[in-house]
Length: 132
Image 1 (cartoon, helix red, strand yellow):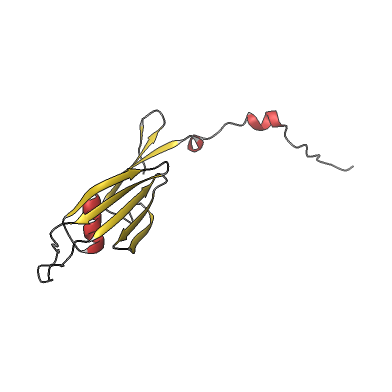
Image 2: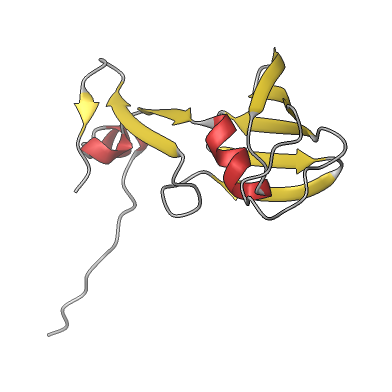
């Protein structure tokens, strides 16, 4: 006597009837970034200000400049020219920071990579999601 198991692939209707877990639902991530504070930490130069911003479909870019050539370290000489920066925050949580043409940050915004960023997560309904 032989026991044979015959595999029958599920039908498309059966596949569509599978319950989707809660983590399969859309989640909204909101990122708040202290841009002047972040640039101060990246450059060592204080007094950053946003002078223009441009929004596109997938990101927001901020043009920033340091004012008055102030430095954080009292012993350092003041800089002769103000620095220019471009900060681009992508809607997927990625960020790029260029200061005077030099890349200072290129990566994901998380609490580990930027303590000036605060991330909050929400269900589509607007209810906050608490992460452990």
